[in-house]
Each structure stands twice: as structure tokens, then as C-alpha cells.
Length: 157
Image 1 (tube, rainbow, N blue to C red):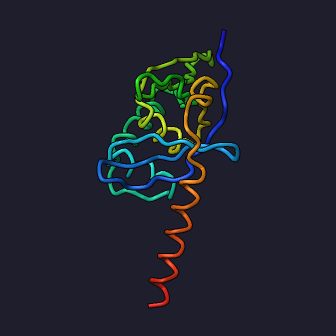
Image 2: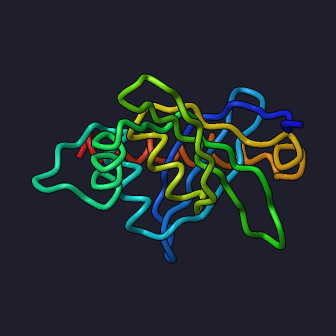
């Protein structure tokens, strides 16, 4: 039996002293997952479509998947235990006989978010996790307002 899920998008990636805060959500709610700086930078690059001189780790993984005839179907952040998020990457692969295979892999949510962003794959959160996380919509809204105000002040100078 599959769990009920809620679709979310990456709303923002904000640097912190220990890495990056990735804000995930939809119009109903936003929550935060903290990731290390390198994965936060990768997510940001994928969001912006930044071209890289050489493939980074997530690019390498995507290239390997593509070479094997596989792709990221969807990502599900499926559990939250003692402040740690857990995720599953759902892949689909087709062999030379056009037989489709679905593969589910345990992975860090940060890597899953990066891969979903890079591959334009849907990102979901289990309803159980969604109901448990704190709504950070107001925090994100205030941060966006502050960055807009700071940007306007810099333009005026």
C-alpha cells in the first residue's frame, strides 16, 4: 500500500553558517531541509540552469543513468526521525526490449532534491511528514522581502 503524498517545489535555497537551507513547499505550506554547502550550490545551479565546465557529481550520476536507459521518475521525502529526513529516489529504466523496470533507492533528501531539480522530476513529501513539519512560509516571505529591500538599496547607491 502506498502512502499519500503532497507535491512540493524548491521555493528557495539560502546560505547559512553551516550549509544551506532549502525551502520546499507549495501554496499551502513551506518547510526547510538543511543541506551541506556543496549540494545547496548544486541545487542552485540546477535551478538557474548554470552551465558548468565539467560534470559535477550529480551530473555524473545523471549521465550514468542516461547511459543505462534510466531516469529519475520522482522523489519522495518519506520519513522524518529525530530531526533527520529520509527520501526515496524512484527511477525508471527501459531495456532494449522496451521492458520498463521501476527501481526505488534510499538516498539523502539533499541529493534527491538536487537530482529532481536537475531532471525536472516531481518532488513529493509523504502526508505524514507534511503534517509533522513546521510551516515556514512566513519566514521565507520575510527573507524574500528583506533581500528585495537590500537589492533596491544597492541599486540606489
